[in-house]
Image (cartoon, rainbow, N blue to C red):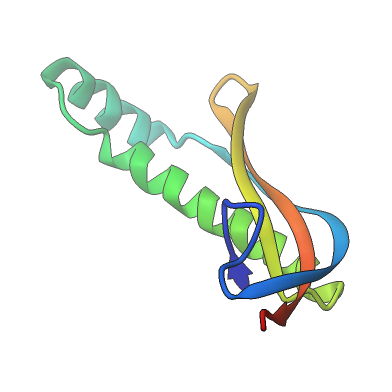
Length: 107
């Protein structure tokens, strides 16, 4: 599956737009990670616990979006975007979305 943030795919021609596809993941903070993050916040620097949590959420959202596109027999997903939102205190949603398309090689 080709994923691009652009509206086209180099070397290919879009032959059909199959519509919006999306995937999401909601993650909650863990008390142990929260304590470590607060301590790191005092000292400064990257909060590795949250970086890892958000990376896992992004990957799961991408995988779910790709599954939806594969069910439509898409070749690619164009204009891929990410969005996050807090759904409750301590829990956030990672949303990945784009447009599923079918492609032909450009001549």
